[in-house]
Length: 163
Image (cartoon, rainbow, N blue to C red; front, side):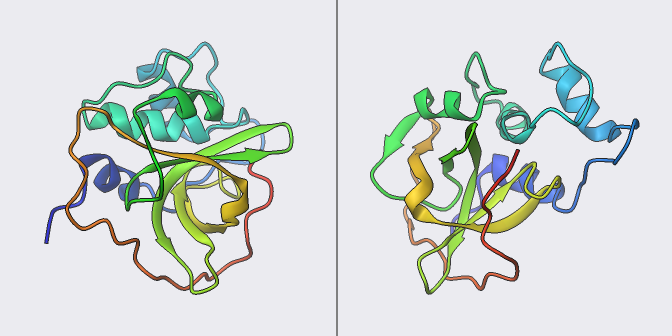
Protein backbone atom coordinates (compact mmCIF):
# COMPACT_ATOMS: atom_id res chain seq x y z
CA UNK A 1 0.00 0.00 0.00
CA UNK A 2 1.42 3.38 -0.97
CA UNK A 3 1.59 6.33 1.37
CA UNK A 4 -0.88 9.16 1.00
CA UNK A 5 0.48 12.17 -0.93
CA UNK A 6 2.02 14.84 1.29
CA UNK A 7 -0.61 17.43 0.26
CA UNK A 8 -3.38 15.09 1.42
CA UNK A 9 -1.72 14.50 4.78
CA UNK A 10 -1.60 18.29 5.18
CA UNK A 11 -5.23 18.70 4.07
CA UNK A 12 -6.50 16.12 6.57
CA UNK A 13 -4.77 17.98 9.44
CA UNK A 14 -7.23 20.82 8.97
CA UNK A 15 -10.57 18.96 8.83
CA UNK A 16 -13.13 20.93 10.89
CA UNK A 17 -11.11 24.18 10.83
CA UNK A 18 -13.83 26.82 10.41
CA UNK A 19 -14.21 30.50 9.71
CA UNK A 20 -14.91 32.65 12.73
CA UNK A 21 -18.25 34.46 12.28
CA UNK A 22 -18.21 38.23 12.61
CA UNK A 23 -15.28 40.63 12.58
CA UNK A 24 -12.66 38.11 13.78
CA UNK A 25 -10.92 35.72 11.38
CA UNK A 26 -9.39 32.29 11.87
CA UNK A 27 -5.65 32.76 12.57
CA UNK A 28 -4.71 29.65 10.56
CA UNK A 29 -6.47 30.92 7.42
CA UNK A 30 -4.75 34.28 7.96
CA UNK A 31 -1.37 32.47 8.17
CA UNK A 32 -2.07 30.71 4.86
CA UNK A 33 -2.97 34.02 3.22
CA UNK A 34 0.17 35.70 4.53
CA UNK A 35 2.45 32.87 3.39
CA UNK A 36 0.78 32.86 -0.04
CA UNK A 37 1.27 36.66 -0.19
CA UNK A 38 -2.43 37.42 -0.61
CA UNK A 39 -3.47 41.06 -0.77
CA UNK A 40 -6.34 40.45 1.68
CA UNK A 41 -6.34 39.15 5.25
CA UNK A 42 -9.77 37.88 6.25
CA UNK A 43 -11.72 34.63 5.98
CA UNK A 44 -14.87 36.09 4.38
CA UNK A 45 -13.44 35.97 0.83
CA UNK A 46 -14.01 32.48 -0.66
CA UNK A 47 -10.95 30.48 0.37
CA UNK A 48 -11.18 27.06 -1.29
CA UNK A 49 -8.29 27.97 -3.62
CA UNK A 50 -6.32 29.26 -0.65
CA UNK A 51 -6.73 25.90 1.09
CA UNK A 52 -5.60 23.87 -1.94
CA UNK A 53 -2.67 26.27 -2.55
CA UNK A 54 -1.59 25.97 1.10
CA UNK A 55 -1.63 22.16 0.93
CA UNK A 56 0.33 22.08 -2.34
CA UNK A 57 2.82 24.65 -1.05
CA UNK A 58 3.39 22.52 2.07
CA UNK A 59 4.16 19.61 -0.28
CA UNK A 60 6.75 21.79 -2.09
CA UNK A 61 4.71 21.75 -5.29
CA UNK A 62 4.03 24.64 -7.67
CA UNK A 63 0.72 26.48 -7.55
CA UNK A 64 -1.07 28.51 -10.23
CA UNK A 65 -0.34 32.24 -10.47
CA UNK A 66 -3.96 32.96 -9.53
CA UNK A 67 -4.21 30.18 -6.90
CA UNK A 68 -7.05 32.00 -5.14
CA UNK A 69 -9.38 31.45 -8.11
CA UNK A 70 -10.85 27.95 -8.08
CA UNK A 71 -10.99 27.74 -11.86
CA UNK A 72 -7.27 28.64 -12.16
CA UNK A 73 -6.59 25.10 -10.93
CA UNK A 74 -8.13 23.84 -14.22
CA UNK A 75 -4.97 25.13 -15.96
CA UNK A 76 -2.59 23.49 -13.46
CA UNK A 77 -0.82 20.14 -13.45
CA UNK A 78 -1.78 17.22 -15.66
CA UNK A 79 -5.43 16.74 -16.64
CA UNK A 80 -6.80 13.29 -15.79
CA UNK A 81 -9.62 11.50 -17.60
CA UNK A 82 -11.09 10.23 -14.33
CA UNK A 83 -10.62 10.89 -10.61
CA UNK A 84 -7.72 9.45 -8.62
CA UNK A 85 -7.58 9.63 -4.81
CA UNK A 86 -5.87 12.90 -3.87
CA UNK A 87 -6.33 14.59 -7.24
CA UNK A 88 -7.44 18.19 -7.48
CA UNK A 89 -11.02 18.49 -8.69
CA UNK A 90 -12.43 21.73 -10.08
CA UNK A 91 -16.19 22.35 -10.06
CA UNK A 92 -18.52 24.81 -11.74
CA UNK A 93 -20.83 26.81 -9.48
CA UNK A 94 -23.06 29.82 -9.95
CA UNK A 95 -20.81 32.87 -9.74
CA UNK A 96 -17.52 31.01 -10.04
CA UNK A 97 -15.99 27.65 -9.21
CA UNK A 98 -14.86 25.44 -6.37
CA UNK A 99 -11.70 23.37 -5.88
CA UNK A 100 -10.79 20.54 -3.53
CA UNK A 101 -9.32 17.04 -3.37
CA UNK A 102 -11.08 13.78 -4.31
CA UNK A 103 -11.09 11.35 -1.39
CA UNK A 104 -13.89 8.97 -2.37
CA UNK A 105 -17.13 8.20 -4.15
CA UNK A 106 -20.54 7.11 -2.87
CA UNK A 107 -22.56 4.16 -4.16
CA UNK A 108 -24.80 6.73 -5.92
CA UNK A 109 -21.72 8.15 -7.73
CA UNK A 110 -21.34 11.37 -5.74
CA UNK A 111 -17.75 12.53 -5.35
CA UNK A 112 -16.49 12.89 -1.79
CA UNK A 113 -14.28 15.96 -1.67
CA UNK A 114 -11.93 17.24 1.03
CA UNK A 115 -11.85 21.00 0.65
CA UNK A 116 -11.83 24.38 2.30
CA UNK A 117 -14.79 26.75 2.48
CA UNK A 118 -17.29 23.90 2.30
CA UNK A 119 -19.96 25.18 4.67
CA UNK A 120 -17.36 27.77 5.80
CA UNK A 121 -15.03 25.03 7.05
CA UNK A 122 -12.57 22.37 5.93
CA UNK A 123 -14.66 19.25 5.46
CA UNK A 124 -15.31 16.16 3.40
CA UNK A 125 -18.55 16.76 1.49
CA UNK A 126 -20.47 15.03 -1.31
CA UNK A 127 -20.62 16.71 -4.75
CA UNK A 128 -22.50 15.94 -7.95
CA UNK A 129 -20.01 14.74 -10.56
CA UNK A 130 -22.04 16.62 -13.19
CA UNK A 131 -20.47 19.86 -11.84
CA UNK A 132 -16.88 18.70 -12.51
CA UNK A 133 -14.78 20.83 -14.86
CA UNK A 134 -11.81 18.49 -14.54
CA UNK A 135 -9.45 16.40 -12.45
CA UNK A 136 -5.78 17.37 -12.11
CA UNK A 137 -2.57 15.84 -10.74
CA UNK A 138 0.75 17.58 -9.96
CA UNK A 139 2.83 17.33 -13.15
CA UNK A 140 6.03 16.39 -11.28
CA UNK A 141 4.46 13.63 -9.16
CA UNK A 142 3.96 10.08 -10.51
CA UNK A 143 0.38 8.83 -10.33
CA UNK A 144 -0.24 6.22 -7.62
CA UNK A 145 -0.27 2.58 -8.69
CA UNK A 146 -3.64 2.04 -7.03
CA UNK A 147 -6.01 4.57 -8.57
CA UNK A 148 -9.18 3.10 -7.11
CA UNK A 149 -11.40 5.80 -5.64
CA UNK A 150 -12.64 4.34 -2.34
CA UNK A 151 -16.33 3.87 -1.65
CA UNK A 152 -17.55 6.12 1.16
CA UNK A 153 -20.84 7.01 2.81
CA UNK A 154 -22.01 10.63 2.61
CA UNK A 155 -23.00 11.92 6.05
CA UNK A 156 -24.32 15.32 4.96
CA UNK A 157 -26.26 16.98 2.18
CA UNK A 158 -24.86 17.32 -1.34
CA UNK A 159 -22.88 20.55 -1.64
CA UNK A 160 -24.62 23.11 -3.85
CA UNK A 161 -22.94 26.46 -3.07
CA UNK A 162 -19.44 26.93 -1.69
CA UNK A 163 -19.24 30.74 -1.85
